[in-house]
Length: 280
Image (cartoon, rainbow, N blue to C red; front, side, top):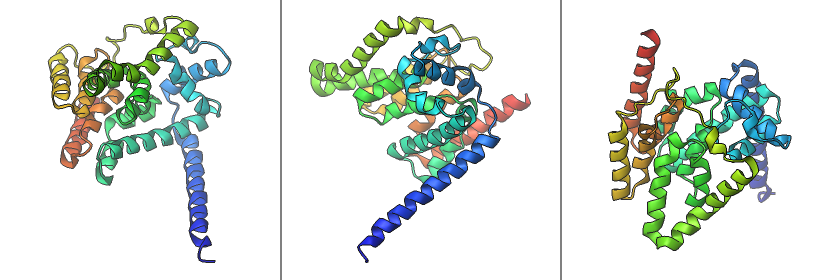
């Protein structure tokens, strides 16, 4: 009888987690506002894939095609339900990535309440997918980093040099070949999809500091390469991009994950910026 108790406890915990998940999903699906990016670009792109068509038929979708494939499980649900599940998964992913990067519970709480996370959640954007590339094996992480270059570009450069350092040309080829093959196949199927990216630098929501931020980004990237430390390259990408919406600054915050006081200061400071811009 006593041997069955652990199994019974695990079964009870599983049922409890499922019930909590369903309850939160129902609540969120009824009260969350429509997410502009999920409604207008990402869900339509995933549905295009589901129907055997190009995701680039969806207006506003400029990401790699495997992004739309990843979103199919969310898109097949009613829009409000899929959006609710997307929020839960996004928060779980941010928590997981922060934990893997050394954050404790308090730091994770600060990160989840930060403006980049809140902004991404409200818009239904996908930076939570991109940041998975920070902690996955490099050959796999490349697929996620490429989803949002303004989040992952500098990390891709860092991983390229790191692969060379650790195993020379052979290791570099092993690391980047799966990604390279996927890009070639995607171009064969969907055409040169990367040429569909439009110039959005002057959009009102663009919070990039480019080009003034280029020296900062290059300094972070150089430091990352010199110290062989990925965190600096995580912080570098938004500074090197001419187009960064608020939610894509999350990489900078995650780079601070092991540092409680610094994370708190960054989050509080960002909320001050939001308040100033809102009331200005």
